Image (cartoon, rainbow, N blue to C red; front, side, top):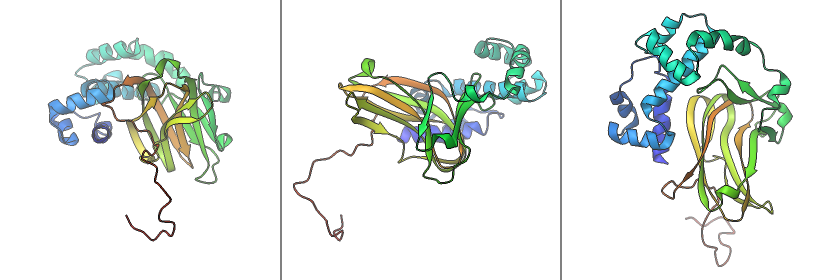
Length: 293
């Protein structure tokens, strides 16, 4: 997990320096690893090179500027360290499948229109659940985006207590993953989270017994944070029936989620399952609470 923390620290730094020139030496200095070792770590954890990540995020910021500002395309291109408008247009077209000017013309009317409430509550595949789901809102955001055209969000609207929570979630059959180790990863951004937010995944049997579970309670996300990558890794036992996953928000705040991926991993990737393993004791101990470890 120390590699994950190093990658998260580096991504947090990158998010604050996207409009500046960034060298591989700068990145290596932040991560604490050699540039060659860090390149391997970043590629393994994020699924792309640091250079590809930087370009993707610069293009995402540029796309937001195209929709929500009147800045000239050349100024946007230079601000995000593209050497020319032509180079920016080539890169933008490759990712968004249209040139920047056409993107601004076609997408701005959609971005400026408030999503209708029925759309927010009926995103394909996603459902709103939790202890107090009606005190939260989930929806589509076209301004706060990791890359592409939209992200999902979950925010509190009338939460009274930090113990009230909601989750934006999905469920699917476990059949194709039985006997395998599965990593769920995504990018999350938060604003004003007073209690905590987290990514979570659960594996259940047909009898609805919980076989594997992690909700990041030992590494929660709090406060206001930039986009960063988080992961949950669970084994899917042979008797698994259902896999559930989602983003949770407890108490007041606003959380965004984007670039959700599932992938099979081998046993070199440690499980984050929260089940406590260990041998059963012969008899109960320390019933007076006076014995020390």
